Amino acid sequence: MKIVVFGTGYVGLVQAVGMAHFGFEVIGIDIDEEKVKSLKKREIPFYEPGLGEKLREVLDLGKLNFSLDWNGEGEVVFVCVPTLRMKNGECDLRAVKSVFERLVENDFRGLVVLKSTIPPTEMDELEEKFRDKFEIVSNPEFLREGKAWEDFLKPERIVIGVRSAEAFEKMKRIYAKVEAPIFGMSVESAQLSKYASNTMLAARLSIMNEIANIADLIGADIQDVEKVVGSDRRIGSSFLRSGAGFGGSCFPKDVLALDVVARKFDYEPKLIAPIIDLNEEMVDRFVKKIENKLGDFEGVNFGVWGLTFNANTDDVRESPAIKICRNILEKGGILKVFDPRGAENAKKELKGEIEFVENMEDVLPAESLLVLTEWPEFDVDNWKEIGEKLKYKWIFDGKNFLNRDRIGEGGLDYCGIGICEMDVLDLGNSRLD
Ligand code: UDX
Image (cartoon, rainbow, N blue to C red; front, side, top):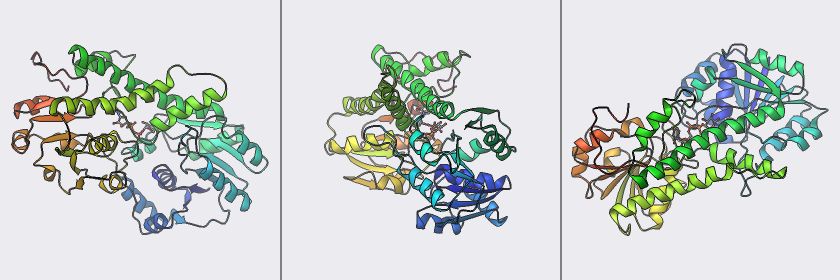
């Protein structure tokens, strides 16, 4: 079976390499000439651990090809183009529409699989228009950036939304080599499942963040609270770590899009929009905390570690770190920043008194150090040395991930989100178990 993947970004490239890895003949199509050139030269134009090696492996086997042009060949088309959020919260379907137009121009008659995240019912008009030409299937992705290849090979589930039993059988054949439960359902249910998963995860983080704000006010410690809440099996302990807001290309966009869909059907969601409102507020509260400790930012030199929204990625989309940096720059602060992978993307987002450095140590000396992404290398053990290059002895952790005991041992004070700043009782158990 020959497979065509439209869009070779984070999602599409993983899909294309993955399908080739399963032995299908795959062609990846993109409108970005530079991207196609780079992929043909066996280089991926973004950072995703493990994907580069797999790409080269399938290219060597001759299973994958990239092109700007397409002549209509292939039995199954995966649509992996971006569906950005517009100002009104709606999805921008222009890229999907243009793929559909190419399908019609080339008289394609196979199966069209939507991996791009599209809100339920927003495709109705498009689907109606193309119904007699090809069948549309929804196959949402649940890939985490930084762990995308691992998630592709070992997903927790495969969701397939179809309009016919034949399409479902074909999709099952495509994923035959993946060991994961396959959930077959209607296109609407598949699309809603994706939004439900992301909204649930985002809500869970926002609830913990809200509780962290309360912890700050009453002098409790959110990391102790997280342990207790997470040890309830009905809740579970992953995805509970509070921080100065979550980011990424999916959560904020998808949560808002679900709100927009509900309103189109005259249902006013009570819980969805506040998830995002609180998330925005977390950044401001974190900056306020820094101001409370250090005073006015005018002319203050900050060292910053971390700009990406998550570790193991070069993606800075909706990154709380970028929002925090912007906020500080607006208030007259001066930044020296380091990120292991995200500097190039961050340079497009940040303007002002900012210097990008090549080594993490080079953000020092500074008046204060902010750690804004959970890259493991930032959890250092030489805090004493670092402290000697800081005017104010505070370490601000926007992701609540640093080892606070070690920071304390190095003679520095720690400030996170929802973390008691009074002396904590030492009961002999590490806070980060
Ligand atoms: C997410 C979903 O996990 C994935 O299934 C979906 O398809 C796309 O959106 P991604 O955005 O790549 O994936 O990253 P993820 O690891 O989910 O992190 C999202 C944000 O939540 C990050 O800013 C991260 O730092 C934050 N986060 C995560 C927390 O603040 N606390 C946690 O405990 C976990």
